[in-house]
Length: 129
Image 1 (cartoon, rainbow, N blue to C red):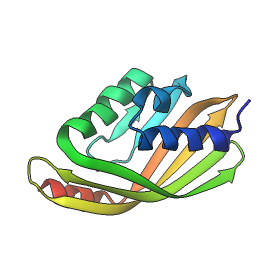
Image 2: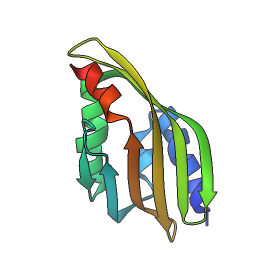
Image 3: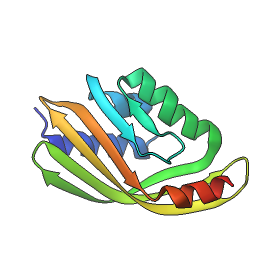
Image 4: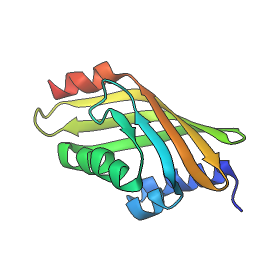
């Protein structure tokens, strides 16, 4: 069985390839995926379908070149922390942004059971105004 660290590393590799099916392959049916309050996709989602429609589909429709660039991945057993940068161009305004972000992942028995995002939502909001 792959380690929690490898599962999350594989998720980020799939993200770089824009392979949504591979990104969601290890998500548990009982996941709690939380996008930070103030973020365009804010909320807690509890299924692959909710995550896909409320986060990834929305980002794909509203932003051009929306990207997460992984800078560091930290192994803390069943908790894995990804640190990097978001960037993109909001289609309605043509404004771009770049901000730091941390993702905190929980992995149990080979499945992602938790995700929580921490980012500077003000920088994202300014691009949307």
